[in-house]
Image (cartoon, rainbow, N blue to C red; front, side):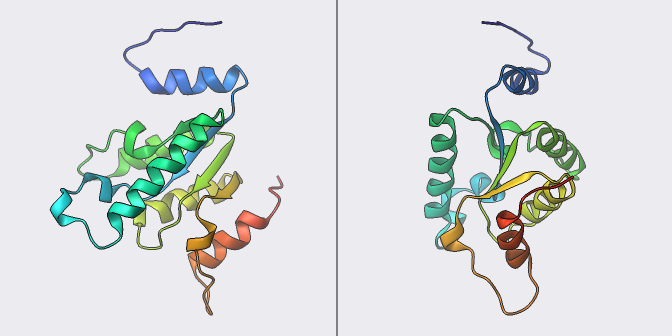
Length: 153
């Protein structure tokens, strides 16, 4: 067993080391902003969606994954958002799989999904029963189609 204590880079070192030691790593794309709202500002259904996302992340970790969850693992203090995007890109590059809890209203999820798509990562749809195929082109349709494809270089 390897023990590594680094305060400055913390989670990223643990994430990379875990990957190197053979434990599967997963990046969880999901809405983040709702987790930062006060309770009295949550829209209908957000509290339930948050609980389901927390449960899904816990399930990943119970099943032996080292899960990277942006709400928990990416510093969300960023007045522009660029550092958040680059931190997430770095983590997506290092992961084995990308799990997507799709919410079509989450702009950050659209961005992160685009990065995972460009990096040809294996996509696993976390909430398939909640993603509806549309009659016209949409990111929901792209996600449903991409999640069914084999990733090729």
